[in-house]
Image 1 (spheres, rainbow, N blue to C red):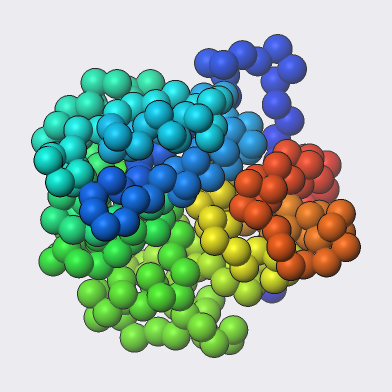
Image 2: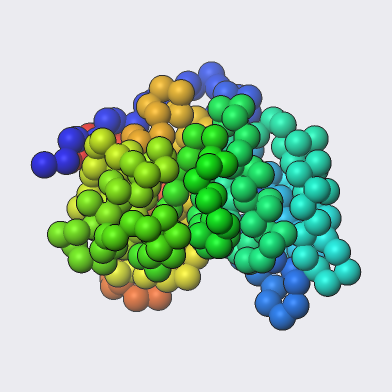
Length: 302
C-alpha cells in the first residue's frame, strides 16, 4: 500500500516574495508552421497558483508579449531566435545564466517544440549541477528521447512528467521494457525509469504514479475533467511551485506527490462546481489549485 502523503507545510504568515521562491518556465515555439505559447502561460499559472512568489516565462522573443498579455503576473525573459524562429542555443544559455539566476526551480518543455536547438537547450539545462531542481515536461521529454545517451549528461535534481506516449519514447531510447498503460504494470514502469535515471518520475494518466525508484505512490483522486489540453502544463507548474517553496524541507518525491494530489483534487472541485466533468479549461483548473492545496495543509491523504 502506498505510504500516506505528508501534510503540506503551513506558509509563513510574515513571508514575502523572497520567501516563497521563483520558478522559471522555459518553453514556447515560434518557428513555422506551428506557434505554441499557451503551454508556457498555463505552466506559469500553475506555479503561481501553487504559491510560488514569482514566475519567469522564458520563451522565444516574438512570443513574450502575448504570453505576458495572457498572464501579466509573470515576468518575461525573451530568448533569441534565428531568422526562421528557431532558438539560438548559445544565446539562450547565456540569457538563462544571466537573467534567471534568481530562479529556484526550472520547468522546461511546455510548447517547446522538437529539433536540434531544443535538444541542445534541454540537455544543457539538465547537465547543470548547481542543485536547482528541473521539472521536465512535454517536448523536453521528446528532446531527451531523441538525444543519444542523454542519460550520461543528467546532473540536476530532476522530476520527469511523461504521459504514456512520452514514457514509451524514453523507454525505447533507454531499452526499458515496461508498460506505461496497464494499471497493474504502471507502478513498475515508473520505478524502472526512475531507477535508470536517478530521478523522480510522474507517470501521468488515470491513477498517476509517482516514483523515485525506491518508493512508489499512486494517486486515487481525479476524474476525466483532467483530460483536456493544458492540464499537464498546469501540473508541471504546480510541481515546480511546491518545489520552490518546500523542496528543501519535503524533497522532490513528496513535492511531486502533493502536486499530483492537488491537481487531481482541483479537477474534482471544478466538476463539483460545474455539475459535470466535461468542458473544463486548463486555466480554470489552475484557478482551483489554491483551494485544493488548502485541503492538503490540514489532512494527509493515503
